[in-house]
Structures are given as C-alpha cells and as structure tokens.
Length: 636
Image 1: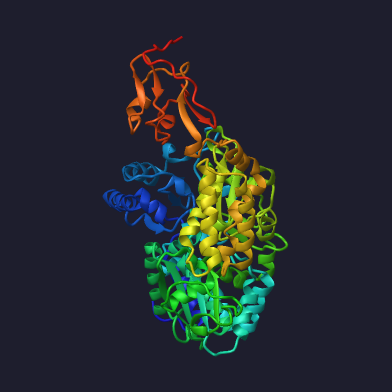
Image 2: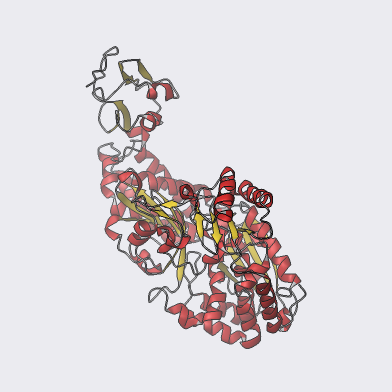
C-alpha cells in the first residue's frame, strides 16, 4: 500500500481490498480484548492456527483476532462468519472439536452455544438476548476488525468521513454539523461537543491542541479501553476531523498506564495511518497537517479531570487548576486545548458520514445518539452494552442484563462512577439520559452501571466509594482533602456501630461545603454516593446508627454468624473450611461457632450447601444460646 493522496485513492484501496476478500469464505473471529486475554484467548488463537493447518484448511478459512465483543463474562468468545455462529467460554481444548465439527462438517457444537432461561440453544450472536436489545452503532465494528490491520477498518468504510470532511467540507461546515447533532461529551459532564470545539477554535492563539481523554478510572468501567483496543482508527479518525474543524495541528491521546494492550494497538494504528498519508503532512492531499502523540498517565483518578490531565501532559503532577479560565481557552501550556473522551471522538465519523439529522433521530430530546455502559454487579449478563439514549433502566438490567441472579430482588443501580449516585427500584422505568439521571441524584458519568441486589448494604456502598475518592483526591484543595476524609470517618463509625445521631448532621453539612468550595469535579460531586443513599435508603442509616443493625448483614461489626441447630446436618464442610478454626463439632454432632474466634469472613455461609441453609447471619441481636457441644444431629 502506498500513500493515499486523494479520496479517489482511498476508495480505490477499499475496492482492491474487497476484491481480494470472499464474503462467503469462513472467517473465525476470536475476541482478544483484555477480558478475553485473561480467559486465555492467546491459547485459543494459537490452537485455531494449529488445527486449521493440520486439517489443511489454511487456504479455505481466515482467522481474525478482534477487539472486545462486549459479553465479557462469557469469554473467550468465538464467532464464525458468514453464518455468525457464536461460541461462548471457548478454551483451547475446545478448538479441535470446533474445527472438525463446524469448519469441516458444517455442524454446530451445541455445548458451546448460549442457552436461554428456557433451555433453548441460540446459535447466532445477534439473536442472543444480550446483543438483541442493543444498538451497537459505535461498538459493533469491534467484532469485525483486527485492530492491528488498517485494511479491516478501511473495508468497513473507515476514513471515508475524514475524506469527506477534508475535501468536501470547510472547517466551519464540519463544526456546524457537529453542533447540529447535539453530540454531548461521553466522559461525564455531557457538555455539547460542538460548543466546546467552537470555543477552542475562536480562542486567541495560532497553536491549538486536541486531546483524547482515555484516563478511564471509574471502578468497573472499561468502555474507552475496549474501544481503543478494538477499533483505534475510529477514535483517530474522529480526532483528525475535530482537529480540522478547530484548526489544530497537534494532538495527544492520554491513556492510562494500566492499558498496555490499548497503547500497543494505538501505536500500530498510528504508524499504519502515517504510512497511508492519513496522518501527518498533507493528509489525503488536502493540505491539512496533523499528528498525534501518546501520553501514558500514571494512573491517578483525578487526572481524568480536564485541567489535571493537561497539567500531567505538561510533565507536572496531575492536579486540577481553577476554572475561571476554561481549558478550551487556556489549556496545555496556556494554549487553547479541546478535550473529549474516547467515545465522543468515535461518534464524529458517524455524524459526518450520516449527517446530524440521522444522529438526532437517535435518543431523547436533550441526549442524542447511543451510549456504551459497563453493566456489572449483581446481574446475570455482565459486560459492555450500547443502547440508544432513553432506554429505561429496566430494559438495560432485565432485557439485556437478564435480571438479578439466584432469585434475588433488585435493590438499586449505581451510575456515573464513584461520584455518581444510587437509584432505587422505584425508578426502574427511568429513561437513561444525561438529564433524567441528574434529576434523581445520579449522573451519566462515563458509563459505569453497577447493579445491586437485596443483600447489598447501602451504607457500605457509600463507604466504598467515599474510601475510593479519599484515596484518589490529589489533596490540592482543603475542602476535598479534608471533607472527603471526614465523610469517610463518619461512614466508618456508622458501619462499625460506633456512631450517634450527631453523624446525621455531619452527613448533611460536609457535602454542602464540598459541593460549594472544592476546586474540581472530584470534590464537588464526591458527596453524591452519600446524598443519594441517604435520600433513598435513610432507613438503613437509621438502623445502623439507632439500632446498631445492618439489615443486609454486611457490616462485620454489626453481625454474627450462627449455625441453626435444627438445620445442621453435621456434614463438617463448614468446619473444614473455616480459616481460623472457629467451628466446633464432629461427625453426627451439631456444629457451633465460637464467636470470640470468628472473624466474620463469611466462608461458612458460602460453603454450607444450599439444601441445608444452616448458616444464619444475625444483625443487631445477641446470638442465641448455643446447643451444647456433643448434641447429636436428629435426621428425618
């Protein structure tokens, strides 16, 4: 492939690649995102290469290692095209059977298919409920592209939007298209991208920067990482288009240190784009020059904040600065700098190709397009889901997520990362968009969605997120540095049974000060987990403070484990598994727990067979009198 000097060159290359590819030729795609790497996708890929060669199929079957498919708990995922046969939880020793049965005999391996709640096997990926109810506009191409091969992206229409923008549109026309689309930033704030671009374009100074924020630090969130790993060119194409509209010739991609696969695939993508003349000088013969550098962050959560991120790029400690002058006007080295997150940039080529009207037909009045969420927690189907703005929480959790496992009841869902809020079951029919989530005390954030069941303690949930934020505060401003720490001290007292009614007053006062006076959004929104749990689950706080009880049976200081004598079968499973030897008993003898030795680790509860259910968690009450050691189990 030589350098591309025009839109015609790009289209000719696309046609050349398509001419060499037979759409009916079997292609084995292997999910190779970070999640599937952990499941052993490397060995699965190696096994496919070896078995396809040993069966003499190397000329008849293609193998493609792709990005994340989204259904992460079922990895390693293998999809065989053109039939779209989807195999889940594939291991290397499953590969010989797949090759001999599916590739040779054209039959399906039933045991590796998805099975629904009615026991029906589903062979095609698009028919699996997890995928069926999604709208994978941004994320869908991940399953079709080898991120290390630019040809795969070009084949699917990649860089056509860039050619259109550079050669058929003025920077002003590109800007207007994005503004009319009402694309809002997917990184958390939801600020209109076009307005931010315009501010940077109109700011004084010739040298301007555009930045991809891939400093994704929310617990359980990995949307941006998976996009960068699986389809880096979509982000790069959007960045170049944005740079053209703004008048920038230099860009940065700020990536977390913990994302080595994303960085590796990005570096390959940048080199391939430069070789084809899609990056660098005189892009596609348009006269527009632009190039990108990758900056690896040190892993600080606060560096996801725009001014802190830009400070880190400058080579200093990633600390936020006052926003009386916005970074769009004075950012990196005091020059105009436009920052958008990974998912925001990936939307841009679609808007340019399809038009603002197409984009505004997706979503709600104030929130257009789709959004990728990290659906995790107490839900049957976990992974990355992409849905149109306005889909309800119920549809996401039950239609896509499959509902709550083990027959448990839904209790709440936490959205927006550690600075988001919890949403109780009465809001399950709430449309998911920027404004509706804010109304109920939460936020969209970058797209984290953590589902909680009836066994979740909401006070402990608030403590978990506040503990995270206390550790991630940069400490530059006093309200954040001390305010979050003081909230954590109060929550620790509550969970340890050492609190008083005075703590209610503190939990009202501290968030008010934080929200009004903290320097950046980390401190200003840190109170959301506390305020939302107090708002919707105040009864649990009252139980902890007034009655010294944890209704969910989670807070160790407020619970005890007890073996119910009438249910104990003297199977000795709990006795053998107790890590501190706190359980006494023997064969045919009722077991008891020595409360002084018990560390309340919960091992006994986990290992006790469900059919017995002999272990009980007692909260806020004294443990009943023990059955005398030596009492025999009465059966039948």
